[in-house]
Amino acid sequence: MTPGTARVLGGPPAAAALLTEAGRRAGRLPRPPHLALVRVGEDPASVSYVRGKAQKAAEVGLSSHVHALPEATTQAELLALVETLNADPAVNGILVQLPLPAHLNPEPVLLALDPAKDVDGLHPANTGALWNNHAGLRPCTPAGIMALLAHHGVTVAGQRTVVVGRSALVGRPVAGLLLNADATVTVAHRATPDLGAVTREADLLIVAAGQVHLITPDMVRPGAVVVDVGIHRVPTESGKGRLTGDVHPDVAQVAAALTPVPGGVGPMTVAQLLMNTVIAAERQHARAPHPEVSGEHVR
Ligand code: NAD
Image (cartoon, rainbow, N blue to C red):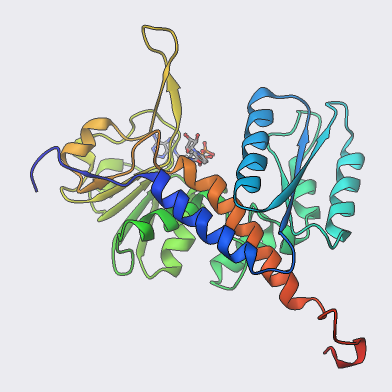
């Protein structure tokens, strides 16, 4: 290939397609899918993320409610809210925005979620389903990456893929999704010796290491497809800072295709969250007794 011509795998068109599909499927349901967004405290990033999710939900015809709890909320109060939302048939999806304030333990909260409403896909019932390739709700960023690749026509089946990072949020689940999609998968992490030797094996390289410009051109096989999940704000002379990823921009001179940062994986996460809410609602409606059918006919 000609150096410097990596195809840009843009997130916005792929996210728009996913949102259109979510809106279309939401419109076929008896009522708009409802997403409960739970936030504790006033962490500015969490406030902004939750507001963005609610706005996007409204744009595609989903209903949502932000349950904004005070910073001083106790573990018991948060668990009680989760139980209430679990039991409410009008709620199809529940998202508890992380991180929680330091005095709250996220683990019991995650475990308390009804897996059928766990639209973040992080409950062990859903991660177990992912690893067994059974139906379940998939974590948003990894599922969004798969949707992005599909949108741009990138072949996954049969490819040698390397995932850099093994977090519960990105690395592990994306490795599971690639495996389910018939890729050959290697997972590298901070204890992997000679990372470049491993990444150079990849036809498809997914990088979620949280390290600025960890992947340099010499670590990429010419013609590989590279997905950069990392997001970092780095200082600039103007003082405003700019966003960059885990992959050095010069990788564009070696790779066949590359997701940009910003404008790559980022927009996929919220789009997939809303698609997950639609999927959860579809499954709940399919399971619920039809209102016009009396109890004794429902098996
Ligand atoms: P994390 O810190 O939980 O995990 C990082 C992983 O990378 C670890 O498993 C670690 O072993 C591995 N790693 C770290 N340094 C390494 C090195 N030098 N060599 C090889 N492996 C190394 O991070 P995360 O939550 O998985 O997020 C990763 C990045 O993706 C972050 O920059 C984060 O901001 C970004 N992110 C973006 C989105 C999005 O929507 N685009 C969503 C989630 C995370």
